[in-house]
Image (tube, rainbow, N blue to C red):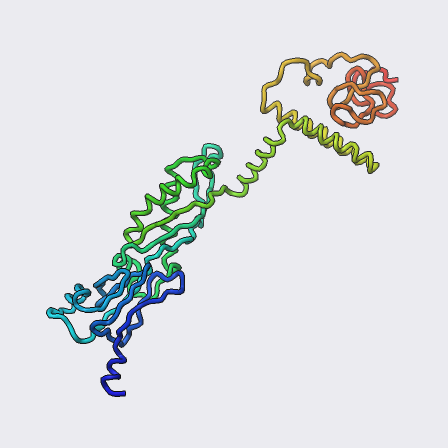
Length: 359
C-alpha cells in the first residue's frame, strides 16, 4: 500500500447511522482521529437529523436526504473555519445523529401520594400513573440544553427529568380541576389533554414535543377503597332486616339435615343480634315510621297481651306453643311470661319480673 492509499484510508467518505436499539436519542459518529474528505457522502434517513459540531459549537443541521459535503451545504462550518474561498482538503468535525421519531409508551407515575381536598372524603391522598410520548423537534436546542458532549444518549437518561416535570404539572392541574375523587375516572381524557397543553411549552425549551400524555389510573389509598367496598355492599343488600330473614330461612333446612340443633341455636342468637344491629342502623339513617310498634319502648308500659299466649322474646310476635324457633325472626324460643314477656327460668312457677303465675 502506497502513502497516498494509506492517507485515503484514513479519510471518511460515507457518514450514516443505522439505529437498531429502539431507545437511542443521540449517537455520535465515530470519527476520532479521522478526517472527513471534501465531497464525502452524508446519508440522513427518515426519522433522523444530523448535526455538525465544530469545536463545541453547533454548526450545520441536516434533515432526511443524501448530501455530498462541500462549502455550499456547510455554510456555517465554512464560516467558522474561515474557508473564504471554499476548501479542497479534508476537515475534522463532530457529527451527531439524532432520532426524530416519536418515542411512545414512556412511563410516568407519582412516587409520593398527592394530598387533595375532596368533597366526599375530606383530605385524601391520590396516586396516579400513565404513559407519555416525546419527539425531538429542535435538534440544536436539544443538543445545547440536554445532550452536551455525550457520545450516546438514550431515553433512560432523560426520563427522570421529564417524569419530574410531568408529575409537577399534573399535580398542579389536578388541584385546579377540583374534581371529586369518585368522578376522576370520567375525566381522565379532559385532564390529560389540559395537562399536556400546559406542559408543551416547558418541553419545547428542551427542543422536545410532548406528543402524548395519557392517564391510566388515579387511585385512592387501600383503606379508602375498603370503605368504598363496604358502602357498595350496603347499597346492594338494601333492607338489612329482610336480608337477615332470608339468610335464616336458607339456614334452617341445612341445620335440620345436619342435626346441628345446638349450633343452629347459637346461629339464631347471632342472627337476632344482627337484626338488632340492623334496626339500630335503620333508626339512625331514617325517621321513625308512624303506626303501631311491635316492641314497647324502654320506660313505657308493655302492650297488653292475652293470658296464656306465648310471645317471641326477640321480636315480640306471637309464637305457637311448642315451637322451637320464631316464625318471624328465627330466634330460639323459650317460655316467657304472658304478662311482661320476660323469659322464664326452666321449672319456674312464677315470673321473676312481675310475679305472674306461669303454671
